[in-house]
Image 1 (cartoon, rainbow, N blue to C red):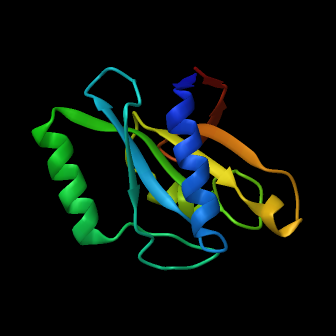
Image 2 (image 1 turned 90 degrees about the vertical axis):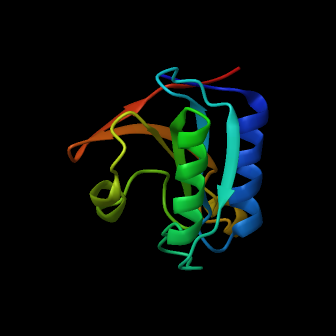
Length: 137
């Protein structure tokens, strides 16, 4: 189960809507081993694409180094889907490399009247995808 503070939820949703029609991406850091999302870190989609995202390598290196210095880890890794449901694609699954992270997907297709807004969380370990409940606190 993912317990996410309201202000973090709101920040993720605002970032996804701001970057629409391109996919947005980022992380939420928290103390190592705590499973507590505390520090929102929006990142740059290096692809600037409505159908694909990748973290800018230099920015990712800087953010991961900063997390190491602060004894943090990526509790949430998020990105948006702009015209499909909030469910990991084959590409998303193949790139999932943090087994302890919650992979949050936000669908912003409601912006284009293509479907409902969705905010969903998944665990992705060794290619296996498991959806988990999200509680906003």
